[in-house]
Length: 155
Image (cartoon, rainbow, N blue to C red; front, top):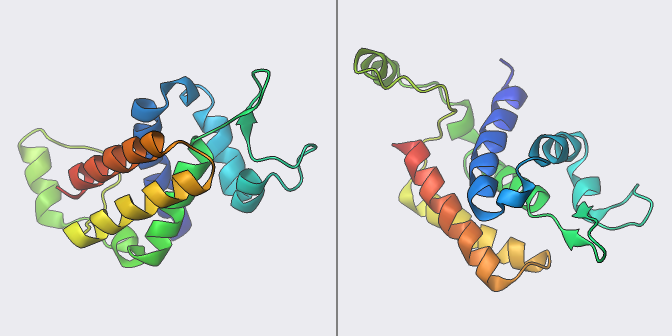
């Protein structure tokens, strides 16, 4: 698997977990939104190239901005900024053998992050979600779930 594929796979899996918990109404649209995001994240967030020039949103009368592209963007930026090395780091062979031996084999992508890196990503997520027009309470929820998910992923 190419580096870009591994990078995208990490982001998709973690973002999907976060969205499933924080914005379950977006679960069905997640694959389509993620595909569009990875084709052109700038367009997905800004709406450039769309007829109305708005970010990806759900058309229910007054458009409701989707959280999915924002979470994908946060993870993309965070991985580029802090964890580029961790994304490409090979899975620890001993850990893989032990997981198989104990029956805990898990095919989810793993990131090995420090507590400081996870905390930084949480703060970054909270700020970016608010900056993209979501309520502070939503931003706090996204940050909390993202931090919890990243810590689980690092175990």
